[in-house]
Amino acid sequence: MSSTDTPADALAIRTADEFRGLYGGVPEGVWAAPGRVNLIGEHTDYNDGFALPFALPQRTRVAAARRTDGMLRLHSADVPSGVLTVRVADLDPAHPPQAPDGWARYPAGVVWALLDADLPVPVGLRGGADLHIRSDVPTGAGLSSSAALEVAAALALTELYGIPLARPELAALARRAENAYVGVPCGVMDQMASACATDGHALHLDTRDLRQQHIPFDCAAAGLRLLVVDTRVQHDLADGAYAERRSSCHEAAAALGLPALRDLPYPELDRALGRLGDPTVRRRVRHVVTENERVVRVEELLRAGRLREAGPLLTEGHASLRDDYEVSCPELDLAVATANAAGAYGARMTGGGFGGSALALIDADAEPAVTRAVTEAFARAGHRPPRITAAEPSAGAHRVL
Ligand code: GLA
Image (tube, rainbow, N blue to C red; front, side, top):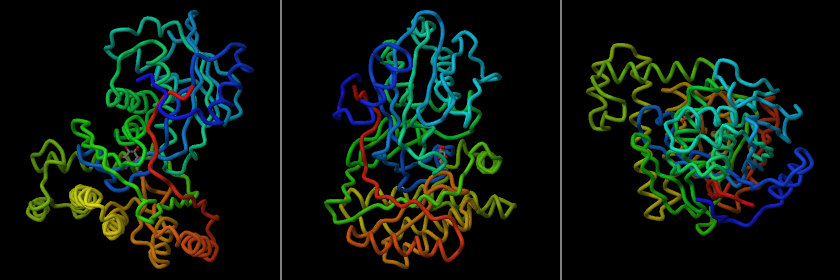
C-alpha cells in the first residue's frame, strides 16, 4: 500500500515545501486522494445498492510526519486559519476543533476514528502527527472534497503508523469519521471511490459488502469526453433533506419487510409499490430500485464498449432524481437539458444533489459547443456562471512522495 504509483506532481512538491516552512521539519511523506464523479447509482449507497463512480484528476494532498508528544497539528493551505493544535487525547465528536469552513473536523475525525476502531496498532498514533493539506478538488461542488481529505489523511496516518487497513476498510473508517465525528450522514460511495478507484476505470461498487470491480472506461479512446458542470450552487449534506431521504428509504424497506431497498428486485417493483400507501415514499422507492437497475445496465454497456448507449440511461437517472427523489435544482436541470439539447449523449446531476455538479457525456469535439451552450443558458437564466471542466477517470488514493 505504500508504493508510489504515479509520479509526484507539482502540487505535492509544493505541499512538502510548505510543510517544511510551517513545521520546521521534513515531512515523512505526501499522500494524495482524489475527488470523484459518480457516473450512475445515486442515493443507492445507504440502501445497500450499487454505484459506478470514478476518481477525478483533482486531489487532496496531505504532507505528514509523526509526533511523540500527543499533539495533532493541522494546517490547510486552502483556508486561512493558521495551524490548529489539538491534543489527541482530547479528540471528542462533541467538541471538534473549530476552524473556518470546518475543514479541520475531517482529519481530526479520521484520527479519532482510527483510535476508536478495534485496530491492532493505534498506540503510536496517540503520539500525534503534523499534517499540512493542499487540495485542488473544488469544495461544495458535489465532487467529494470531504472524502478526498478524509481518505488522504487516513492513508497518510495508516502508512506512517503501520496500521494494516485494506482500502475498503480504510474507506469505511473515513466514512465513520464523517458520520460520527463531522456529523454528516453520508453513505460510503465517495470514500470508496477516493480510496479504491483506478486510472481509466469506473469503480463498480456493491455497497452492501464493499465488493468492487474495476470497469474499463476509456472515454478518450472512444472519442468521448465527460464534462463536469459545477453549477456553483452550494449544497450541504448535513442539511435535513439528505437525512430525510435516507430515513424514508429505511422506513420503506422495513414496511416491505426487507433489510434494505437493495433487496427489492426490479421486476417486483410495481407489486411492492402497491403495498406502500404514501405517494412520496412510493416515488423514493421507485428511484432507488430503478437506479440500481440503471447501474447494472450502464455497467454492461461499459463492459461491451458501447459507451454512447449509456447516455440515455444517465438522462433517465436525472429525471428520476429530479421527479421521484426530488434532489435536483433548477441550475442542475438547466445544465442537463442544455447539454442534451447541444448534442450530449446523456447528462445527469452527480452526487447528493440540491446543487453541486452535473455530468454530460459528449463527443470530444463537441466540448466547445456544449460548454458555450450551457454557459449562455446560465447567463440567460440569471444564474452564476458555471465552471465547466472535462474529467478523466483517474487514480485513487496513493502515496506521492
Ligand atoms: C453524497 C453522499 C454519498 C451518496 C451521494 C448520493 O455524495 O456522500 O454517500 O449518498 O450523496 O448518491
